[in-house]
Amino acid sequence: MRAVTILLGLLLALPALAEVHSSHAITMYDAPKYGPSFRHFDYVNANAPTGGQIKLHVIGGFDSFMPYLPKGSAAAGVGGLGPSFLYDSLTVRSLDEPFTEYGLLAERMEWPDDRSWITFTLRDQARFADGQPVTAEDVVWSFNQLTEHGQPLYAYYYADVEKVEALSERKVKFTFKPGDNRELVMIVGQLPVLPKHFWKDKDFTQADLTVPMGSGPYRIASFKPGKQVVYERRDDYWAWDLPVIQGQYNFGRVIFEYYLDQTVALEAFKKGDYDFRFEMNSKLWATAYTGRDFNNGKLVKEEIHHQNPSGMQGFIFNTRRPLFQDPVLREAMAYALDFEWSNKQLFYNQYKRTRSYFQNSEMAATGLPSETELKLLAPLRDELPERVFTEEYQPPVSDGSGRPRENLRTAQTLLKKAGYEVRNGQLFNPEGKPVKFEFLLYSPAFERVVLPFARNLKALGINADVIRVDESQYLQRIRNFNFDMIVGGWGQSSSPGNEQRDFWSSKAADRPSSRNYAGIKDPAIDSLVKTLISAKDREALVTSSRALDRALQWGFYVIPNWGMDYHRFAYRSRLAHPDLPPYLGVDGALDLWWDTTAE
Image (cartoon, rainbow, N blue to C red; front, side, top):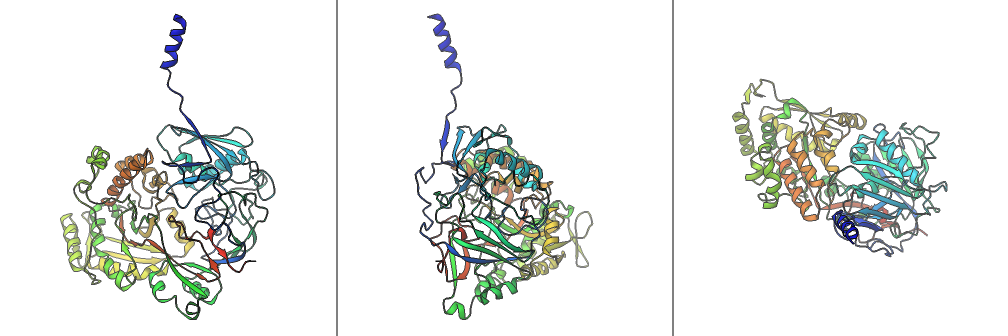
């Protein structure tokens, strides 16, 4: 009896086994919207006709079908950071939930409460285009190739994955390093799975025009190097009957036509040379989308609202440059941008000023820090600007005159107080060096915005040379942070997480091709990013996002630009779409559209 009592005591002393969840879907915090027997997503037209075609346009050119390498210019549609018609992933995201992943290649996921690992059981019917099964070995091989040879983003994105192992032909396990990154179980589900056997006798590291093979709904039917690529819908695609695919990928052919000039491309659209445009230029939207075909209904002009966080677009300072390491100079220069004038004279009052890195979302910091935010910020008080705690950040507001004298006087006061002085019309910093820099562009469309900004800087004694280079040179310079200032930004999802390291962390600042364009190296921001990634629930995520937002705002790493909460689409009337979901990308979720003339 005594032995039984001792054994019982030992068992009670052991930690409880963590519950292992098994499901068709996984969500960041709440239960998935769609149950295991759902037939299709609510936002699709499951009865959409299939066939016909859609022609799209791309500016530039391409010299590669390998989107995962840090070299070359990959063709549209092959994947990478853009949409992929060729490669399936383990899971896919629904567009009417903040962040939920449903199995595509995977029919089942299993993970413990602490999310320290996850296993994916692959569907038995999953096949590559040549009929070979998609296996756990393909998943392991894809992960290793991307992290070892792919763009640096992948190694960084998956840095917390300790190991990946094929447990059987159809079961693969990802084990994570110790930490509180709840998002990792979902991030690894987004991994594109490539065919190991296809690359067996080919060089994966060559960014060339080797036509790839995947397991996705399309294949490359033909191409003209740098000019055109044609995707053809696969009748034998293995996943047509899956709920996560129903009502999607309806076009029989998707054709990307390449143009070297935006003006020529717009005229080609109006002429009927391609079918769909997402318009980013407010002036063109207000003035150029007119004519006979718009009047007779052959062309449709539509604004579609969305609930996506718009993130931050701005004039980005490269703080790796000694000149821009002074936050006072960065703050002062913001007073030279007259948004109110630009919005009226250039943008036809279509935009709202951006003030947050999580704009258009509940994660944007407003007012003063809440008590819960202060719990995160207070331990970092010595490392953060005092105004994080005492002021609400707002970008400067001008009189809309185009030459905001009051704002420029404010800038002059800031600079003078910090030891800057003007001599013969040239501003010199406290070390006696002239304040001059290059503003790097590749699109002529932004010159009309940047040149008035440069003229206002000139009134402060700052010389900004606006230079424009071709796209390939621009990409190389951005990848290597070889610039002073650019127009750029960071999109945000409705559930920010691991990607924030690539945006703001000290490690990313030194890593070529990272998205830490500003070169931010700040221990306080590193700490806040870590807190955001480890948020245990939605409330904690919102709180940590707001705290991070404040630190970034008062760091003056960008001069905020503008944004809007709707997308501008123009398309030929033979195209149709369902009621589009709230979390809608700039491509208009074209996977959901169809050609009404398809037989």
